[in-house]
Length: 434
Image (spheres, rainbow, N blue to C red):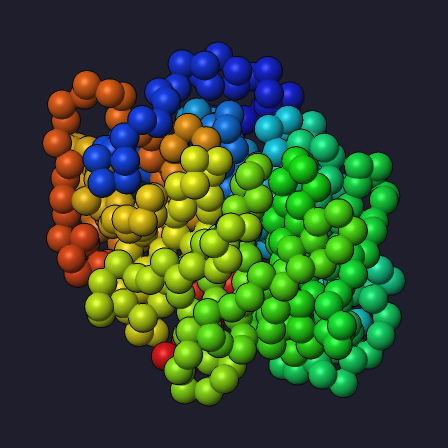
């Protein structure tokens, strides 16, 4: 394993960025060279964030497959980002900062004082997933720095912009009676920075008691969720998908459901993607979601799924060209495929993989402004899940698409692989209700 040194990423990657091919083709035409990335020794890794310099960040299991650490990859080099003293860490959301800051979540060595199962537990593995307090972190210059809370025990960091700001959510000291499933304290959407210990709470819509900020851009626009405390992982904590802009908060609407209305990313133009429940489902709080694109002119648009057999879809990343990536799955996430949506067309990325790649893509988590994509792939030879990097083929390249059967049938995951995917999507080890 070649270790990534501590460095200022902007200067290290400038030459590679200049040489990268521009995106000119439509979603239905572009082919991709795909390569799997290294791991920290375990059987599951995932790329969850990809900036314009090609820095990929996400998670990798350690060799015991009992813990996982936040991991960064850059053009063949890999780095274990470590933890805040506890067993697990992860980079969950698209980060987008191009100056070397990576934001995520990490456990400390302090046991949960109130026995809470905080938001982080859904993204960790092993028996210790909920045992220790978890904080948001900012990693830069080779060092992981803990981000403060609002007086409570736990926090969660999502995206960072190029102005030194990071967004997420943090507990205060209020014991909220609407909390369930092990959650005790109320939590609020926050912005950290640009100063090291600076934290600012964002306002909530009238009647809401908890919320989370999930992504931001360089214009200061922030998106997230608002609702009641609930379980601190979506559901009724996400009654409202919201946009903070200019000091105010705007409800982005919904797709007909009353829960899981969750923005995941926002581009420089203010376009927002995520997922939201559609009408139906076993109960009002059951996960019954479709990917959405929200624009100021068009409101919230249901992007649908890749096929009639798929009932779940989530839009997870967007770039400034309004290319959207995500995942589309059958019931209970038994079979999943990654999608690229552009100009009204949704395609299975497995149909656009250039010849020579032996794996099968399972999910697409993020896309940068060069059209490069990262996510998670299944390696049939080893039965493991791998982080991958997909780069658009240069114009004029005559390589043919592989067109694997995954385009039609999806990836039939083992139960172990399915649970790993559910954790990556933030649903812990509980099976989806639909």
